[in-house]
Image (cartoon, rainbow, N blue to C red; front, side, top):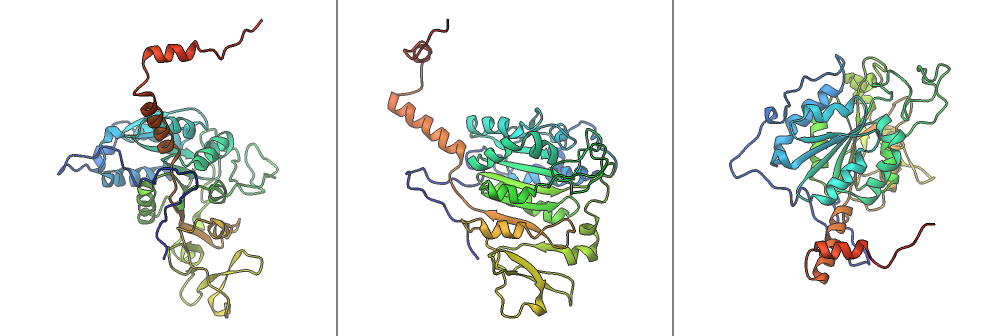
Length: 368
C-alpha cells in the first residue's frame, strides 16, 4: 500500500499543504448537524431524481469537516445539479454555464480561508465548460468538484450530452448520437488531476466515504457521481443498482489491494495485457498472469487511466472508488506565496500611490 507522496520539483516550490489547512474551524466543543447545512428553500427537483440522494449525503457529511459554515462556499454553473447552492446552507453562487471552475479558481486563490466546492453536471462541465474544467485540474486549484453524470441534458429537456452513449436517441439526435462520449474519469486523469474518484448516487455509504477523501485532499478533487434522471434518461444505471448485478459489475477499488470483483463462484480479476493495458478475466483463468494491485498514490497515472478504461457501453465492469490521490503544490497556494514574496521585497503591501504609478507607468502606447 502506497501512502500519498509529496511531489517535489526542481523549481524550489514551497512545500505541500494538506486538507483544509488555513480554513477557520469551529470553536472547541461546537458541533454542527445536517440540519445546520439544510437551507430553508424548498427543494425542487423531479420526484425520483438522484440529486436528492447526493444533497442528503453532502448535508449529512458537511458537519464532519468541523468548519464554520461561513467559510464554506458552493459554486455551480447551469443545469439541474446547479440548483445545489440554493439548498445547501452555506455561502454559494449559481453562476453561468460552464464557468463554475473559473469563478471557484478566483475564490480559492483570493481567499485562503475558504473551503471551495463546485457542483456541476455532465453537460455543464464537459461541453461549454470543458476548457475551464481541464485547466482547473491541470493547475491543481484547491477545490472539490462534484460532477453529476446522468448522461443527458435534463434542465433543457432531454438533448444528448457529452457522456451519452453512441446511438442515443434524444430530441436533438432523433436518428441516434454519432458522438463518441467522454469518460470523465479518463479525462481527469489525462489532465493530471491529483484526486479522481467515481461513485453512485444510490450508494450512500460509498458516496460519503469518497466525499470524505475528496475533502481531505488539498488540490483539485474531481468526483464523478453516476446520477439517475427519471424523466429523460431513467434507468441509465439500473444494472449497477440491482444488488446481484452490482456485485457482478462493480469493480470496487481499494488502495493497496488486488483488483478483484464478481459474484461468489464467479470472481474476476484485473490483469495486465501484453500491450501494457489491463483487462478483466475470470480468476480461474488468470493462470500466472500478474493481477493488478491498485495504487492511488502512484505519481504516474498510467495504471489508473488503464483502470478507467475498463468501463464501456455495456457496463460489464465499472470501476468505482478513488482512482488517484497524489500531492503536489496547488495553484492558489503558489500564487499567494508569490504575492507574499513580492510584498516582502517591496517592503510591505502596495499603497494607492504605488498602484497609481503602476497604472500610469512608462509601458504605454497611443492608438490613432
